[in-house]
Image (tube, rainbow over all chains, first blue to last red; front, top):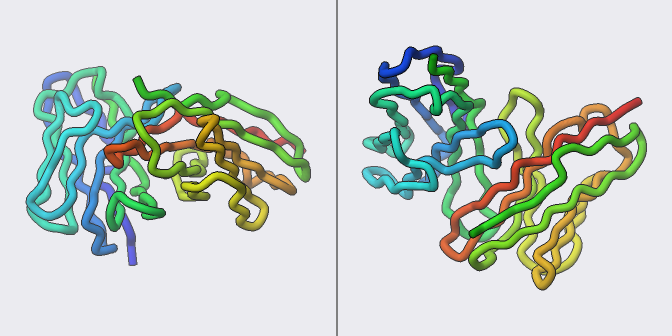
Length: 114
Length: 109
């Protein structure tokens, strides 16, 4: 039972390159989220999904795209990476968004854009 | 705008008690969470408060006052493994989580 798995864990990109981060969960959770975490700032929501085939914008969606073709997978894409996208990216899942439903996080993906 | 305030860093001694405060101003309130995050790792859930008062869970307790927009996390009998960042997050009226920047807790022997 792996929980929430993110790949890759580390990646270095040059400005303008593209890449995709994969989040896979075996918890059968409906909700999935992509956050970024930067020094001195709280976690910021990039995009999220409330179920298979759905996606929605979060607080900082510009420069990112997402897809949720299968319930267990949530992909985050960077079409043309910029140095401002250097960050640690966390995927998280939850059963839903109400009550005491907590987030289960993946281990994180550290992205550096040169 | 929405805002969560926590101290940036705190230092405490092994075996002692420490209180980490969190104040918030959000559009509505649907619960407050505390998460622990060790350096280089993912956040993990510690506690949830939705009603005023104290929730106790072992060495950790969390308090909420909705009228004051205030919460604290109380850690007792501190251990070296408690060295971590503690994140406060509030669920707003749209059921979105607003996160504080976290409090880095340093435990000294």
